[in-house]
Image 1 (cartoon, helix red, strand yellow):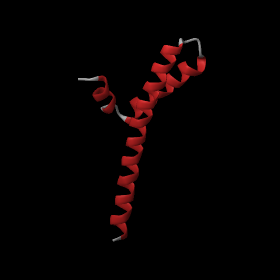
Image 2: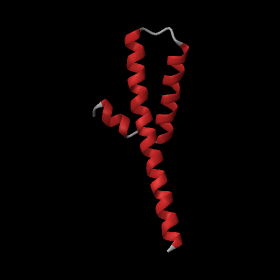
Image 3: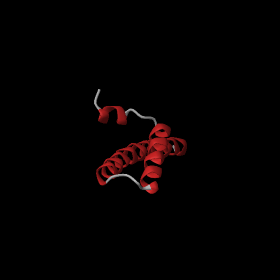
Length: 70
């Protein structure tokens, strides 16, 4: 299983927790440029996972509201 596949299989809570950790490490500083770039890229991946979860939740809520109105 690739890293990308493992990332896509994270729950919202797992992705959010790891993203918070990445942000904390970046804000703390003290990392090399290469490590900072790797952390940034990981953060972007995790943010994408979180956004997809939120978009899916919004779609489910919208669909439920629409069914309730019918």
